Length: 226
Image (cartoon, rainbow, N blue to C red):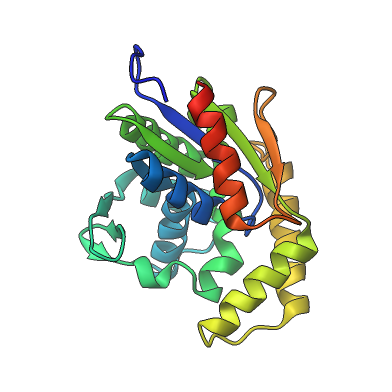
């Protein structure tokens, strides 16, 4: 990674739900010694807040207002960064099934995306970072130093998510997980604002038949070339 640049180093990792973006991004950031931001957690924070405030996920005006007023911060912790929403640690609530069920719908709201994209760009300007999401290389950081599109089949992603939920002793049915991922893929790829797609200059990595460590090594190799 070349430290002599006019703007902070940034590595964008995009891809569909449950493809391993967060795990890979966090590992890459740790080895590069830079910050990591999973932008999906920010949309999950708004989804969780909408549940708390009993806001219907179809109420775009209320969701936009919620996102514009939300104070979302990362707080350093011994076990990894924690996500704070208006001063409250909500990290443990972000992967609840209730949030899973509405996060794609919430994140499709243009006002929500505009509010959070502005925050994400501001965070990237503060120093070198690895950032993962659905629209990092195409919208948030179109001039990112390195762009990766990480993907896997819906079946593989569902199997991994199902196993993860069972390990966490959370009720899970493989078919429901698979159907949910396919629904999220449709919403994410067909939304009008910042749809999920591979940036023209992004390198695609399919993780169907490789381990997380192999994904990390591939991404690190790309980072070392820039």
